[in-house]
Structure formats: structure tokens, C-alpha cells
Amino acid sequence: SFLYSPKSKVPHTSPGNGNSYISLNNSIITVNEITDNSYPFVNILFYSNQAQSFIGSTTKPGSDCCPMGATNCQYGSIIIQGSTYTTIANEKDYKITLNKADGVDAFGYTFIPNKAGTYKLPDLISNIETTGVYAAFIMNCSTASDYTIEGDIIFMNPYGYLSGEKFPFLYYNLVISGLYVGLFIMWAVLFFKFKETALKIQFWVSFVILLGFIESLSNYIIYSSINKSGNFSTSDAVFMTLFSTLKNGFARALVVLVALGYGIIV
Image (cartoon, rainbow, N blue to C red):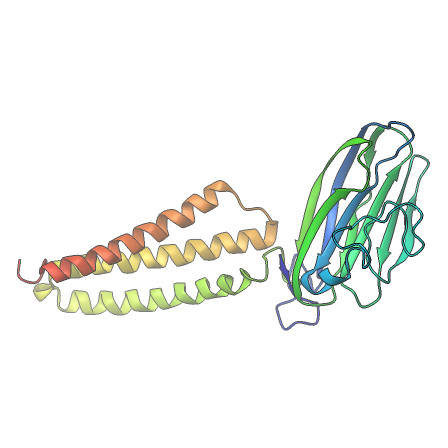
């Protein structure tokens, strides 16, 4: 997801309120069994494209997990070059550490249980300081234990949940909706003024303008809803696609009808 930094010149409105972060919320990890005293090392990694070169071993390309006996990283964690380790949770049955390097937009969380069971994790929140494309990965640096994880990964921009590449479409559709209203009013005034000499094709032009307004307005409402709630439903996708297809289909059909002379010579 594309995230803006809090310093970016974008609106600082609810629900982002000027904050930009990635988080894992409401997460539950179920460790089914621990075999041969080999604990799972569940790693949650948030990083930007710019930080990708800092992730993984420099001596063994393709190796992201810190091996046993390594001196420059913590065994079982994701390697982030130059990082330091901080324990952010040290409970009776599990521990969570964070490895983070100064100036590198990468956050590695490692969950280490000491017995099988179900664990409710605290929310893991990483504040973003640099604008860019960010990704989230969950991986296990141990193959000996079986586990499942559930939770919500949230990408929050200063203005809300909407991804940075979709954000321009929010206000674009609002502006286009306003232009369609102005166009429709002007068209309606001229249409009724010269209705006695109006051509059949002009009735269909009115319908296409109306469809364009409904399409832009519905897109704005849906993008605004996503920005506030973070949820995108199948019905939203169907609604957006339906009006877009109808408007584009009728507009192209009009071109064909005019080319055939319908409404002009008939």
C-alpha cells in the first residue's frame, strides 16, 4: 500500500488525524504443538520498497532468517542490517521483540512462545516517517512447529484508510460530479428552450450525462466510505462496475448511432 508521511501535504483528517502507520491489530496466534523443544519464531515484517536492500543476509543472499550462532542478529528473527533489538512484551508464556535500524523504514517483530496454546497479542503499531510503498509479511523462521495466525493488518494514511494511489480519485470524482451537475443544468436549459426542434439523439445524450453523474457520485461515496472504514465490499465493486459499464456502453453506442444517422435523418 502507498503511504504518505505525516509531513506530506495531504489532508490530516479523521480517521488518520495526521498519523501514518502500519499495524497488526486483534491478532491471535495458535501454536498447535512444539516438537523437540523447537519453538516457532513467528515474524511480522513491515517495510518500504526503499528498505528492501537492508533486509536479509549480506553474506548469504536469499536468506532472511537469522541462523543459530550468528553474532550480528538475534536467532530466529528477520535480518535487518544494522538493527538493534528491543523487547516490547515479555510475558510468562511468550516474548515479542522488535528489530529496527535507524534511518531504515523496516520493522521486524518476532513472537516466541515457550509452549503450545492460543495467544492474544498486543497491537503492533509502526509509525511511518517516509512516503513510499509499504508491504507486510508474516513468516516463520522455524519449520518444526505448526501454528496459525489471525488478525487485521492496517495501513493508515494521514487522512484515512484509502491507499495513496487511490486517494486522488476521491476528490477527482467529487469535482467531476460537480461538473456533471453544471453540464446537466446547462444542457437541460438549452434542451427545453429548443425542445420543439430537438433531435431524438439528444434524448440519449441527456441519459448519458445523467449516467456519468451517477457514476462519479457513486465512486466518490464508495471511496469516501473506504477511507473512513477501511472496508471494501463485493457490492461496492459491483455497483462501481455497473454504472461505469452502463455509461461507457451508452456513450459508445451513441457514436455508432450518430455514424449511422439515427436521430438525424430518421
